[in-house]
Length: 94
Image (cartoon, rainbow, N blue to C red; front, top):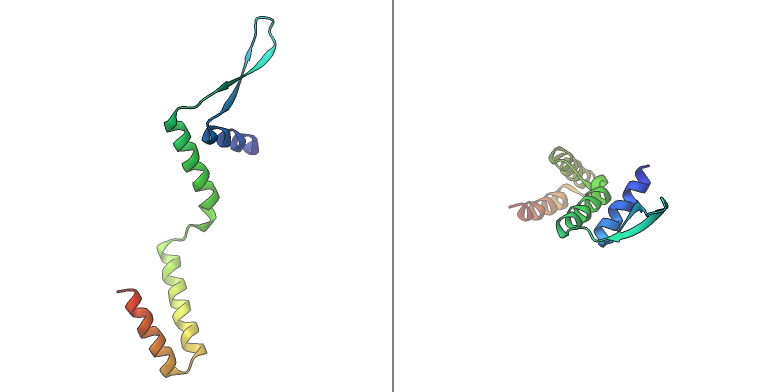
């Protein structure tokens, strides 16, 4: 069910949606419709959010990763080199 809904969101984002209705004989017939521009924008934004949802990182995660990075630099490089690299990186964060 979710996959079929994603397909519909894709069609809305593309600007063409198939709607089903019944004709005079009671048969299901497709009708192409064009979504409103605002609906297309919402669909594109939703698809973007879904595609990038796994990439979201919290502030706490960024801080933890930076601390781990500093620790890795200090463990890998000689002390004077580590401090030189960290001083240069500190300039980036000013």
